Length: 480
Image 1 (cartoon, rainbow, N blue to C red):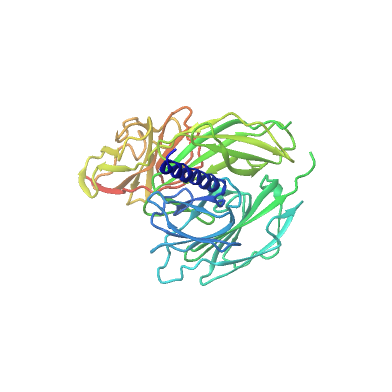
Image 2: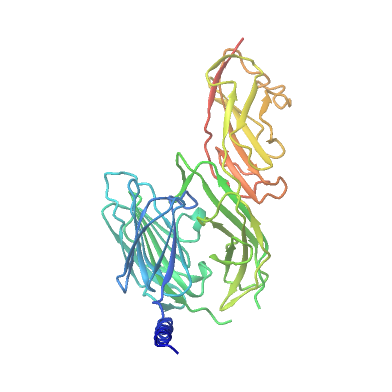
């Protein structure tokens, strides 16, 4: 063999040894943190928010920002992390104690509200939690105390086990303390939340400027001693609200733009008498399910406001029953596909029209055709007498379904009353007070609410009613 060939073979051998040696060196372990930043529970994404991550033990830091869908994704060394968010025009938001010490990806939903007053501090409040130790074990009722300090007055303190607490509309049960910097000495019963084993003790605080701090402590709830049957008749209904509600505090508060999207789940109780809670599982492909939340045994309702819910995208659920250290087989799977938002615009009689017929033809139109069925209810106000008349009242079967016009008293419902025809030379106001789209009239799985001014309920719309104001309110004057 020629010398040059021997030298080449020797070089390749050394190179091979070097490569194999490198292959034996393990890459440092990393964890994946994925975040979803939204402006309200069930609200819109917050793009362009700066995200700082800091390891509580390693002090490792990472900086990124949310994309146009409000998401961020970062690989970090295993640790518990503090996450801080900042964006111009938005309040500060911080999460403390997110556990990313395992090999599985970690997901977190973070609310970052628009700032209430730009002149006020946007620094999130500080939380001091007493009675709860990281990785502590607790059996029976758990004593705790939360004290809050910060630049602005405290508005809400929320406390819950096994989930991120917030407004009861979406996250009940939870403890809430209003307009106070301290909870005082309290006791929490794990049975209220249906949790056992490894779980979390979580505190969320908002101040008057919308700044938010979310504290997470990993704990273990020691279950009582103790096959459990699954819950029955699971029903999932996607709810789209055409005007955004801030589920913040005791009541929903309507805000001028955006939408909400969430799924309401209901089921019948497990036939096992001593069930302690229910666990909800979610999937976006119908095969791979992950826990979405837990509730106590007395509650058979759950509202899912996960940021990944999207119009036209299928989502699947099942529920299990919990007793002691046991978990039942899954319930049947329920699925739903959210409808898009929509609104209603009034056409005629036009706003401030005069000489209008005393039996006018009322016309309106949807901003888009949503669902297979659109249910309407309207109201007419007599501005002189201060009286009003519902027509097409939202009580079955008096809805107008998929109609966009109504001739006054065409159905004779006001015949023989002072409302049989309108009064001459009288000013009236009219508006749509109920406009709801359904994917199915008999058994809906998706509902899109454009208007529900008075929070009316209907047996064919199986969701909790919440008030949404109409966009248009027209006045007109009748002729002779």
